[in-house]
Image (cartoon, rainbow, N blue to C red; front, side):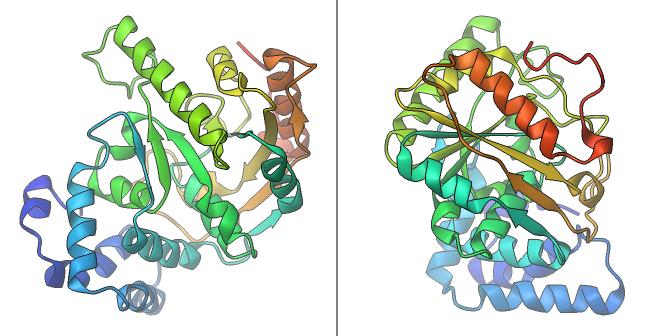
Length: 305
């Protein structure tokens, strides 16, 4: 079940407060008692917001993703989606937050991570927020492709995060088909400029270097165009390795299961002196080293293509 645009256009705050918990939790695979508890938990998380706050959030949800720009996390969506994700993340772990904090305090920071599921960024947000690093979660901006905004469920999830919408290569099946290469390139360049702007203003930008989710769980090569994001003075790359989310939200399945996830944050890599491509390769190898054996890259895979 999903909210169509027609429903969103007419949805009022009082009805939204009533419907959202059950709607969100309808995307979970849970036993009856667990489902009831999950719905109550999400409803409780929304109880502190008045109708005016809900009205603002609904207006935001209706237009989220319409432009290629930065979308800041909405407080209602963030509260609801964090409560939702916590139901699914029992037993999840994060290590290396000190590496992330050190890099962020030192200057412009780009995070590079492998990519397994649409919920990968939500997982990072919750793990940081619940591990005493809520300030870092607030500074996290993820570069997101068009598919992140394609239906109301994904848009609701994205609305709880800081997302920077970009166009993606025409070679990817989920890109906007009507765009030519020049238009895609112009939008991508604008995204990089925005990323640099915010990296220079105490924000961290997250990029999934493979360009899309891994179809095999294994780490694939990074796209060479990602190097443009690190071409800002004083930039450091922080490698992140995520595992388990491919079981939480498998490819092709519209629902999510409760699965513990692990996030490992590696040592920062200074771009200066190495150069953009060499720094990306170093980050790729760091991620590969932190992944479990069944997610490590196949033999002979190039780090950057």
